[in-house]
Length: 382
Image 1 (cartoon, rainbow, N blue to C red):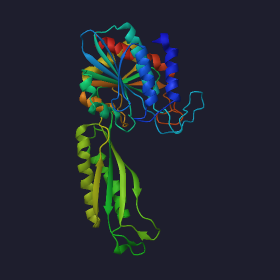
Image 2: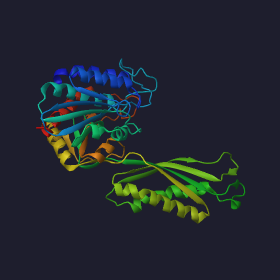
Image 3: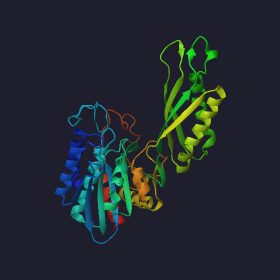
Image 4: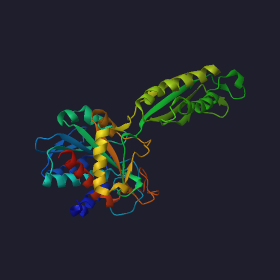
């Protein structure tokens, strides 16, 4: 792929300059489709509105999927280079422009060499950033229309040095759910608190009590996070309000932990409220499930990375990240592996993190990412 590295840089910077939000990636989809057609690859459009699937079949072997997300973020870019975003308050701050480019590079190479036996499905997915584009593609028939035995994904990772891989079996990214708790007390004059059931005092006790879930209910070898991120109550200095609303997020890796979170929260919330004579209501909003790699496909990915960059550039079984990824839906449907590809300096990219307004994808790793996809196909479909 180094033979057309400069071409990939041009693609990546074009996509960066014209970012689009989830389910609105019309220009990006057009660009991807045009490139795939130029490579002689069969193109399918319309899944999840703006999704694109390119397909190459060569021989009678199995079928696999390679996925890249393509949406941007609602963020104003602070970079001043010539390919900075021209779309107000939208930018590629998560590197999806690079993900698309690396997969396009692999598609171009594989379409010309066809050194594999089977079918490769190049999946360009919309709306990863919180809108569940992967889930929608699946619901609209992705795996029914394009049967495959395994699925693979990749994300750039600024905390790893450029060209290094993070690969592990089991959980790589967390599940994310959200909660709303309404505490119902009895308001009144702030000077006469004895006539009230003060929901603000109760909420203060509850915020602390909720932290005992992770310290006393979750197994010490498991990891989970509960964070109260919003507290809303009252309108005046001298009035104790009738109610308080708490909002927050839950992060977990194991399905059992995720399923038990609501029971733990409700039990503690009701207990605290009952102690003060108040009542409460709990609402759980389900987010993305955990991204969990299967063993066999992880072994394949690790073997490919080992051949590509060497043992000293592979971090096996890294500490899983508490951030989320909707590739998790694809891994619920099929066995597969999701890896991290480093984009940072030798000490990690500390000044340009994902989802920051000065982030820019490291073009130096475009060829490595494309080569990983190619070697994965050639090893899986030998």
